[in-house]
Image (tube, rainbow, N blue to C red; front, side, top):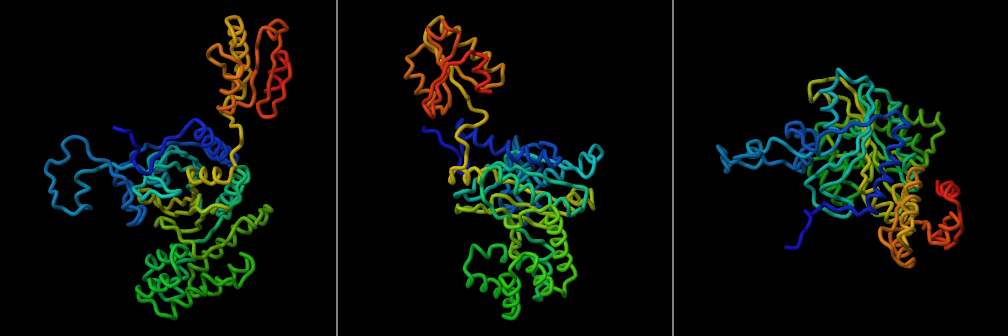
Length: 450
């Protein structure tokens, strides 16, 4: 039988892994700059840890793990699926990194110094329908802060997003909003009792036609006046800048104290960024941004890449009491997540990966004969000891074949060691890109490649 992979999963070749590591290393270096420390959590969590944290739609996408042993014993299989699940599955693959992180914080609260800043890169699983840019198994790269309500961290996350994509060479727009603003909008249009339903429709505005949008609001029982006011608040472009638009919406939802508070929080964050001379052209206030996860309580973020047709490549927001779900109330948190697989697709489509990766071999040492092989093995050993990624052709072969091998593996340099080079104790270095060649002593060669 021909081997296959489960839909929504992928293998990664050495080149793909090198490129993924390039993304990981770039993000990791920026997180460290901002004082974040690494942790890991298990691939499996108790099902009770995950359910009820992502909303009804999110719960449906959790991969359940079947109990081991005779899980069929004493089970009534005529039960509906949700009730049946509790009998046959007690564990699940993690849906994201945030909820397991909250569980980690609660279980390790006596060993953590608050505010606690962590980053984490691990795979997550979602029982979603696979499509371009959406997989069932994919990596997330998260950073979170728990233990402080300070809005400084929201400002830091803007800086982190911008710095990461500046270093990756990708142009992006960082969209932001505040869940409190959405509360204010629903109160201002007289639909506070339908907050979840209205926000769910708002969140998919860019995926449906205006007619469908209005019909879905009508089906909720909203009046034409309420719908008109909602459209006016969210989609009007009467203000030129984010600062001006925040003021316009603040006035429109002034009847809602919580909505006004949300606007003021965003204004505070923009004040921090302005004080740090942050480039405001990369951010955009979007009052229709809702994000589906139900645990967000304050600022929310999404990052969109320019030049490609793909969904958001990053997201995040503030969750003021997520740890309370696990018995540790009143611990404010805020976090962001980088969708590594989507970022990979963006960089690949836009040809933004470097030609040579840091973990790839930089030089291939040739192999021509018994004596040359010994010399070459000594040479490759010295190159590696100097911190240079080096490989050696494993068998004696013609030069053309060894050049072809280096070319296929995209090794930029070949160190040619033949009888003449050995006699003169030099190495003939060929640049595989330019075709130029030059002779160096071993010490000079190390200096040239280091």
